[in-house]
Amino acid sequence: MENRKIPYKIYLNEDEMPKNWYNVRADMKVKPAPLVNPGTLQPMTAADLSPVFCDELIAQELDNDTREVPIPEEILGFYKMYRPSPLVRAYCLEEKLQTPAHIYYKFEGNNTSGSHKLNSAIAQAYYAKKQGLRGVTTETGAGQWGTALSMACAYLGLDCKVYMVKVSYEQKPFRREVMRTYGASVTPSPSMETNVGRKILAEHPGTTGSLGCAISEAVEVATSNPGYRYVLGSVLNQVLLHQSVIGLETKIALDKYGIVPDIIIGCAGGGSNLGGLISPFMGEKLRGERDYRIIAVEPASCPSFTRGKFAYDFCDTGMICPLAKMYTLGAGFIPSPNHAGGLRFHGMSPVLSQLYHDGLMEAVSAEQTAVFEAAEFFARTEGILPAPESSHAIKVAIDEAKKCAETGEAKNIVFGLTGTGYFDLVAYEQFNNGTMTDHIPTDEELAVGLNALPPQPTF
Image 1: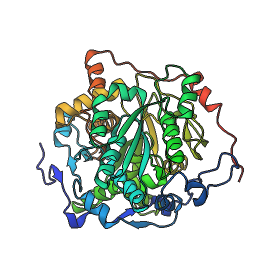
Image 2: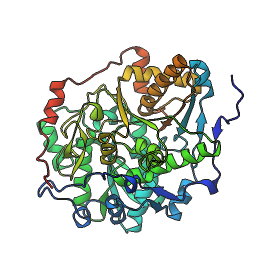
Image 3: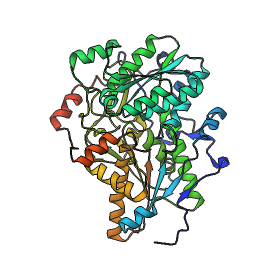
Image 4: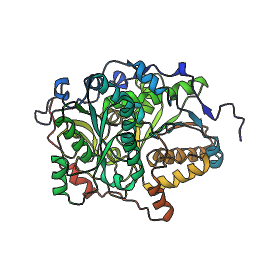
């Protein structure tokens, strides 16, 4: 093994932590398209969004020009409970692969929620508290976001109502119990508690649910209960802004040792982790200061980037939310029940969609059995049981490292390890028992959702 001049784990000091979030939209030549009112097909204003979102979060959502947004002292103080997170040199993985590549991963699992989601959860809960609200509603897929928001709301004394995708609610009971421990109410979605839930169940009896269904229910509850607003764990511009702390810390750590990444890899569901990891690097690329190869990895069972359409679509199955221009499979798309983990959203962040559309990043899909093979290999080599979501990034990082072994190139590979997989053991059990299967939707299956896209704005 080579002389380890680079530490296993690169930590920042507290005074080196970012004091501002970075807004990549400020450097985008082509800005992400605005959210649109589905009735008028005109851009949504702050007044239009105010019944749904917190005021300060609306301002962040609509701000395409401010490059740096100061992180409030209260949020910085909370971050110090678990940040800065380590950037790890994967020496053991490199040796096992016999590759000249240098592999680094940013590990976001060192907090009670077990994932990166807490970075935005505390910010959104803070702004809700600052506005004087009673509580917030949200959806969650695999449960990381719901867990993070429950923790943030408990810290700030806010009520938290979570609508959890039904298949995950049943497969991940312990994640659900963590949310309840933090005081959240957790409801399997679709449910009989809301008008939209009852409608979805009437039209699709026995459905296992989707993030789109859960979003519809959470929005309905927020808008029908005074003192509540809806918050979202991915997709939105504001979420990518908060998650930029991941990439900023990563870049500061790399810069300390003069390391320039050649390849940056992140898993892609709605875009929170990927967008946060790549933001400062993409900023350099957009400004012409440096070039990077950036790869988004999504599940083959929910392939919005690689097989979706770049168009305006509803963010929710109930079709009550604004339209967003994104790579989408259609708001009615529901991943197969055998889809393990998160990354279940039918669309992709408008910011990332625009960057991908403009050729500034790549996207690949991975089948889940291959993803879990990579997860198992990583666990046995690096000693961390990875979340299924970030195992998509692990798979492609391993693939790229193997290519380096073939060519002899010592590339620097950086990927995001979004969290741990200790609440995902049902999926690991299926993999270990050989009962896990891959479901890749056919063109005919995808056409159902893609043919039902709403009318497109003409402005």
